[in-house]
Each structure stands twice: as C-alpha cells, then as structure tokens.
Image 1 (cartoon, rainbow, N blue to C red):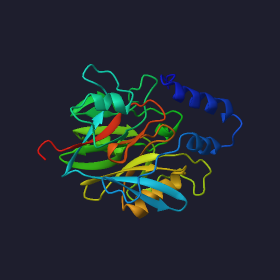
Image 2 (image 1 turned 180 degrees about the vertical axis):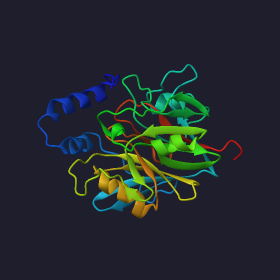
Image 3 (image 1 turned 30 degrees about the vertical axis):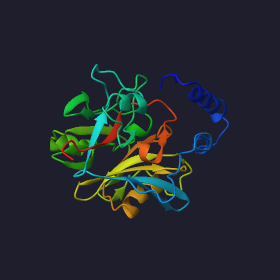
Length: 270
C-alpha cells in the first residue's frame, strides 16, 4: 500500500516494519492489536452494533436489515477517485453514514483488486488471477446485493450464475461455503489478526458486518459466523487494515487508509 499521509499512522507503520522480522508468524497480529486497539462499544449500547464474545475473542457485530436500511459501496467518488478513508466518504454525503467498514482489498492506489459494483455500475472487474496473499486463497468470493437481497458466493459460482447486482465487492478468502469452512483453514492456527468479514442471513434480508476486537485465526472467525450468526456463507474482508466508523458509539477507527468501503444509510423512503 502507499505510504500513509497521517503522521501517527506513519509512526505506527514504521514501528511495525522495524520489528516484524523479529516476530514469529502471528506475532505481528498481536503487536498490531496492542498498538491500535479496536474501540469497545459503550456498556449497554443499543443500536445497529452489539458486542458478542466467543472463546477469548470479543466481536463487534453489526446487523443490517435491508428492509430498514440502505447498504452502499463507496469505491470511487464522482470523479472516479478513491476516497481512501471514512472521513472523505462521509463528507461527500448530505449526512454521515450510520455505519461504515472497509469492504475488501485494494492496490497501492486504493482501487479494488477485484469486482466492485457501485450503484449498479461496475467500477472494477472480477479477478480470477492467481497470486500470493489472502485475496488469492481460492476460493475467494463476492458479497453482493441484488433485488433487495444480499448473498455471498464463491467467485466461480457467481460468474456462472450471471448476476446483475446493485452492489458487489470481491475479496478473499471465503470464510464459509454452504456451511463448510474454507478447505485451507487450520484449526488452532497461530496466524492471528484483528479481522473483519461479512455474512448474510439465510433469507438474504440481514447483512452481518463483523469486526474482531482481538486477534483471531481464520478457523475461529469462520466458526463465529456459522455457529453464532447462523450464516451458511461468509466472506473475509481484510485483517490489519480493518476499520469501523460508527458515530452512534463515537467510533472512528481507521488504522490505515482504505480502499472500497461499505456504508449503511437510512432508506430514502424511510
């Protein structure tokens, strides 16, 4: 990713670079959580988001019923330029969003590395390339909204079905595929990071946006979606750069600049 424009973020990144070579696999995730802890929700908070605990990990779970709220992708401004952060995206709207999270992986210019559909318009094409990193841990997948319902599909299945969504974002790896964990996940893995992801209810009417407050491995993160939220399909969005903008709890957590973002808005007719 690009060098960061914000000095505190630059200092954090410099510290991480200087010690990363000295840490075992997964150790950087714990250091990152220590340097930039995910804020907690206020006690007894009531709103779109709540706190749930599974094992030793606390999660912020935001439930978005699509009959009451509008979920939009913000991958580019009207001039085609990435927003690169929650504040720039929020400032482009008549009123701040109720909630926003990062929405998938991006290149050094903050542009999506895979499919991005914003307001029914394709901003970036599907990627089927092979390569390193989480995005290319096949199967990766696509979260999308079409006809008022949300879904998550592995990329190959999405392509075969021929969708025309109002919103779509591609990321990887898939966390759950028809109720089964991704075949490359390892139970007890020590690769642990703060992570965020998206899942949907079986009827496609509720979207679950989840951010771990402590480092978690892929296996346990996927189990949370399946066993606690009853999702059959879920998609990893990102790890170290995971962010949350949630004004109702006074949270504006963005350790790094961002690429595409998902934002929750009041319905125009509501």
